[in-house]
Image (cartoon, rainbow, N blue to C red; front, top):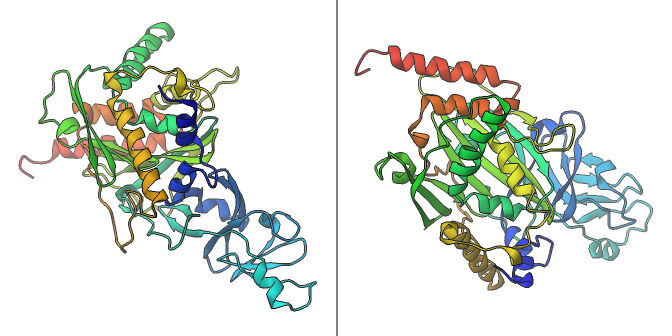
Length: 418
């Protein structure tokens, strides 16, 4: 168990806090490009601070602290210009770096203008989303992870959850919950509610492993009836520090993203890329985005699908998990490793060094290690993932099922050796 002070250090994402300083070294997806089709500005909250994201007429994106430093009015209701944004209240104009360029009702006093600066960051697009960086300069490169830049059909399920982002991340290095939460518990629900629970998640974990790697922690497992030659151990999948988990299998690759809105709120996204072997799909400009449901009309958790069960486990821990009351066991080795990694990188930042998983070189793609034959189920797993996971809420669910099924049929009908 942790002390109150240790738990506070790991969960406080606000400006000036140790974890907040660390997390500001990374880029975050904060909106979809489609959010700016009807209006050029959007209010967002990230790392316990309020921001305005805006899009200029020529298509460039920017991010600036939402409150104008003049009289604190919202810049989300300002006028977007090619070189920044002008406050709607009194017309003060700011550039992409937050410098004050104009104060219309004031005398042309450069000294006054130079003393007024608003906090600002950087904004770029990738994979149909708007990504922002609000940390120290110079900003690192936006990491072009494979799921966001490869060809395929994308759908993104997302929801704002009332809990601290860390308890979601700790779930990423807790493989044993799969056979219990998504296996035994799912089977119990199926028996009591009259449906067939997916079988892919029910195999017992015989061995688990965690290896530190360039991007975070590589998670491995050997399931009952499997060996270390199977993908789940031989390749595994990574927790990408500090707020992603990369998973995949059977023609679906997914990045699970946990954006810390503030200490008690997280934007949790499942960004899926479908590219089944032998599949045929039309080019896609933007991902299909939708909200997955996690509570019913009576306020109860919806637990008859995989991610709904995860949300129940995350959110039911409370807004911020009280780790002074927990009792970790040997099966929690991955959780202990992740906490150690956060502490080590908090110290790096305090010492003026880059933390891990920061990239400062231009690049086209970052390919992450990830199993393909998930749980040894392949074809069955793809269908169960789409129908028994958050993708069941996707407006293109049936098209996705048809895409994967046609790909499998094409593979089965192909001449031997083709």
